[in-house]
Length: 300
Length: 296
Image (cartoon, rainbow over the protein chains, first blue to last red):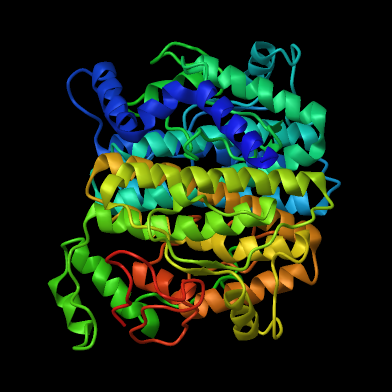
């Protein structure tokens, strides 16, 4: 039957495209994450606090982006602490003046506001869970970072994610799938059942976000879809695999809303791979792109 | 607003009757709560520690259901005999949808591919321990759900592309909560990694379907919320009413809900009343495998 052949073809295409990561996923991902973690940080594997602080850095980044896009305010201005558990002040946020997006689509504005609240809640949840061990927000760059990634993706020398609804969607796109892969990679490293449970719950919410954003990019049309594919490709190059990221589009008669492999599973990234993406290829420990002075905490 | 408690179901899983036994089973299975056994009754199956095989087979049953729903919706044909396993149960209902919107057909095709891939992956991972597809009902189940939810005397999710979205909505958030609950029960890190990968895919599906339904507006958002209310009643709360500002189903900390296997069974058996139940709704002969009957 034509349908079955088309489906088979698509599965084969996916298989070919992602075979390496697929092979890694079932059984390999958690181990790979552990191995890389150990390599990067001498002999000691990361503790749960290390992992949660790693996640907190990413949540600061997401929360700042969405809060600025929807309100024009930073987290501090919105009344959310960026201090460490010990009281050290949070880092600076580099962003254009008046970053509040001029939304014209009410449902999209509502989505952006919802995601902003979710990310703020993730920050607060992790700060609360970590208590005195919580890191302060590191320096975050939401201006030069996007320009750099846009150049790397061949989308032009500058990119302002706050300039329009479509640009906002693409800016959000850059983060959301990375969050999913980061939590998936980290899940296997967490020892505490309680924290694992919460991490899985946050992982799911990031996937809901990613799907909502990707669905809207799909609806925005072919130019936005092509940009998402270029960004996905860039992410996969930055993390060193070249094949663990799928942009939004249509393959073999099926949409690619979900960023996953031929087994229908989302990708997992090690902490090192995530760092490479959010640093825009910058050196571990030195940082770059979204974290110009590197992340805070032991995994950086 | 999302963080307004009134927008969220506030049914506590701890105190909700239908879910109480399931929560106990979860705690017991996790090996950290002996006192939880006191909630089991003499008629209920003894709560025993579940193996990873039990959990993965439980997931496989749910994937069979989703795969049959989506494959039939996009092609009119369900799983092949090879994918359904030997002695597979019959599937009632499910016809190809005439999609008017190309994008919707492409969305549906992708999800069908994913669910088929999940079936194949789990069957392969389980090997000879994989259960075959149980009997699945996609006709009477939706009618009964529509009646129980107050949507009407009947509901055919295959009637048109908008009805299809409501049918998909019925499953997707449940899959997310089921995998989230199951993740903590798995002992193997390998299986955990696989489950996390599948559950995030289910969350993508759920986020996508919820987004599309809000774009449709009335009456589909209302239908979805009537289904959501029914799921909450049967499955211990764990729902966020759908609206343009509540695409994500999550609690006030921005963390997705989880359900015990008992709560999931109460939903898929369309049995909102507390008690021991082992079949009904989408699975007229029950699930295959060890996780089949609710403890309460």
